[in-house]
Length: 171
Image 1 (cartoon, rainbow, N blue to C red):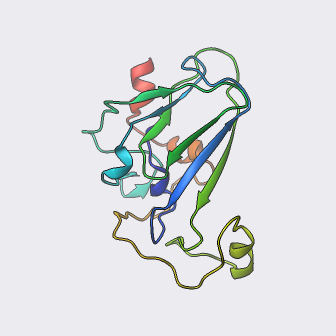
Image 2 (image 1 turned 45 degrees about the vertical axis):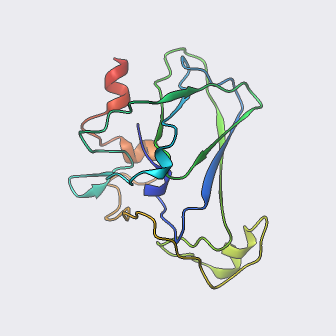
């Protein structure tokens, strides 16, 4: 379903992105990524249903208008900003669409839900230096609290959705 990764893990600034490494070809028929270009510059929409985080946009005015299909061959990558609206079309092909997702953020972007273990947090830095001075930017934030009824993966979070925008349009 349509969502913003930012809704799951807001930080002190939004210098975060996701990289998808395609194990299989990613085409529309097997659930390609859909992204709304430029949407990372807009608002953070509500990802709550009945007061609980559900991992998907729940605003009834949201339609996904302007979305583009991101088709990528096996071995290729997709990159999107953490605030970009995106989702996957239903897989109607019977073929797999495996994807390795990697999340990257600036060393001074601190998760608002807590960094946890200091040494572990810093061990994940690929470039830059550890800092205990997070950079604070004026970015739209909506906390993913209270937590999802079904924790775990995004698919489990979204399984409670009453109104599914992508799935409804597909069938």
